Amino acid sequence: MSTQDYSIVLAGHGSRDPAGIAEFMSLVELMRQRAPQRRIYHGFLEFATPTIDQAVAEAIADGAKTVVMTPGVLLAATHAKNDMPSELLALQQEHPDTAFHFGAAMDLHPRLLELCRLRIIEAEARSTRTVARGDSCLVVVGRGTTDPDANSEIAKLTRMLEEGMGFGASFVCYSGTARPLVADGLKAASLLGFERIVVLPYFLFDGVLVKRIYGAVDDLAARCPDIEVLAAPYLGVHEHVAEVFLERAQEGVEGRASMNCSLCKYRVQIIGFEQQVGTPQQGHHGKVRGLLAKDNTPAAAPAWPPYVPHPIEAESMRIIREGRDWSAFPVEQHTALHRLVHTTGDFSSVDELFFSPGAAAIGMRALLRCRRIVTDVTMVETGLKRAVLQQLEVETWCGVHDPETYLLAEAHGLTRSAAGIRRAWEKFGNDVIVAIGDAPTAIMELVRLVREHGWRPQLVVGLPVGFVGTRECKDALRGLLQVQRITNSGTRGGSPWAATIVNALMIDAIGHVYQQQQAAQEA
Image 1 (cartoon, rainbow, N blue to C red):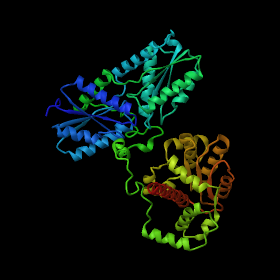
Image 2 (tube, rainbow, N blue to C red):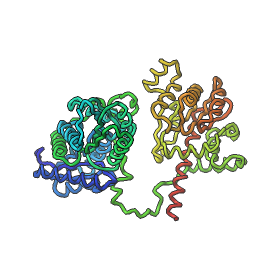
Image 3 (tube, rainbow, N blue to C red):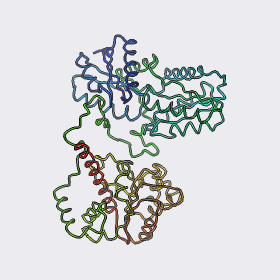
Image 4 (cartoon, helix red, strand yellow):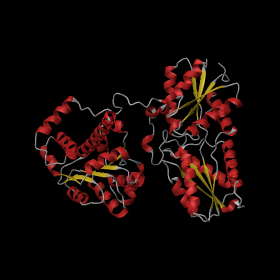
């Protein structure tokens, strides 16, 4: 089979915005016009239809023996490195007689740089004022991802446009996930003292995020009337975009696709992302695949299953509930108390516990919102129930063994557990639940960060065990009125205790969502 005899499936992300979907389909039509000899199909990861597997099935039904999937995205981040390859692997197993190939993302292609220049010139042409480029600041807004390699490409693009077009300065911001966010970036750019600011959204198509960017531009213009603020068009449906996609497909089928692997967090240890090396390629769009085309009639059974304990666990809980009078404890604490007795085998263990007012309910809701748990040691992280974490889509992080933690601990004279807590404050900010089960020094560092630097984690579970500094750190945590907290008195505790409390809150969170869904179905 010749490498020239192949079909293309352009794999887009998908959007809730009909305008973005319409532009994507217009681009596919433009590609067909520019490559009439090629059969070109399209599919989406989420929201819109056809889905990628439907597009591939259509291509095969039309007789395609070789299919190249080309990521319809600007930069190689999670979608191009993870979600789409996992789709391709599943399709290869489903269609073993079809030869599949994968193209690279667009990345910083010279045609796209040229298109960016065109969009900037279009924005400048709409102004009635004549402003030298040296008196203008260029602000490029990227999508923002969890992949630092992809985010850095936006910075590279911005620098190339600044130097190539002669701007006085440039600034980078992102519409989500990465920082600075759009509003913060525009505010910072407005303080640089330039006569004009040109804002370029580095996006392929219209959509919710692009509209937000233009809204932020309008807000800046209203707040800063002395600065001319120009909004450049996004890339959109253009022959340069179509040609780059066709080129990437050709490279893919010929085995010349080049990914940004030298600094890929899945292949090499990148500062701050060391734990993600070797992460399996797994798609995470199943829940919203083709969502907008689905029947919105509620299903007969709840989409969110309840927590179902093992029969032995259930019998243990029955014995514990009947083993003492629990009426003195608030109902919201019962799951945590029962499970701690189950872990320790000791009814008296709960008498030492301290819950700040509302801590259990607030912590449970914070798990549903923040979905990130920080632990002081890996034993606490290991003690968290895997199935429950997966159902809630909660991430865990423990920095005690990270290279940066070693360096931080050595440079500042901290224990590694305390250094890991400091890194969590720097890395994640306030949207975390902190569970400490081993190190009194970790609690004391947390207390210091709360008091001196305004850290406000959503909940702190502090239950270390031992005789050196343990009572003192728990007393300090108990008196820390700025945060919700769960701790105890005395020397008892440990990683199993801390993990048990968090597991109980997660089980309550599952029950809370399940009950809400049942109530909605019955209404």
